[in-house]
Image 1 (tube, rainbow, N blue to C red):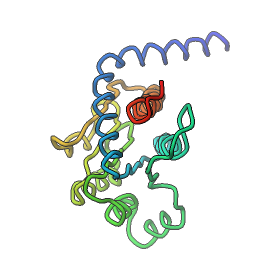
Image 2 (cartoon, rainbow, N blue to C red):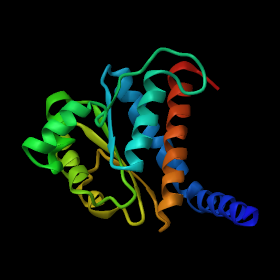
Image 3 (spheres, rainbow, N blue to C red):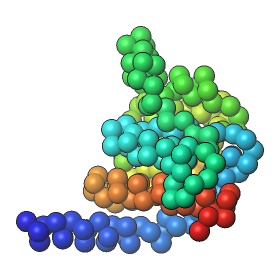
Image 4 (spheres, rainbow, N blue to C red):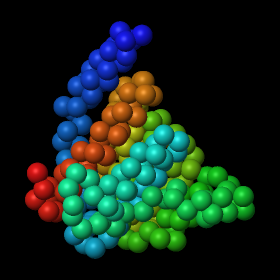
Length: 194
């Protein structure tokens, strides 16, 4: 069993190395977009489903509280946080609006929506991207595989960070590392934290 565990560690490292060089400049560009958003006194909205929702929550908590070192909190909203609102939307309308409705209510021009999805195909995230564009938000899509349907919705003001591999587990690991990279770069650019 320990050999299997070691093999999983190897696969994780190999997957990260496979996409790391390609993603590094895109992650850097995304961090600059987020920094500019924050400097303009705007906010970051973040959403995803399942494990991607957990990564979204980790990202927003790292922005609001801190990443590695103490610093002022940054305005970020995890769109899955309010269970009462979440269940109200899904019971009264349809699950596809679960993120779109809060974006329409809270999103303001200049804010940034960060979508996290291994496939890029969930209808509720597609609706979220459309709602963001309607409200004047730009989108950072953190995707996997071929980016899915979300890729075709992105415009010139948007950024896609796509871990173009097929293993769902490895994509989640890369997405978590991606949000940690974003946190590190944001802290460095805004506060000089190294």
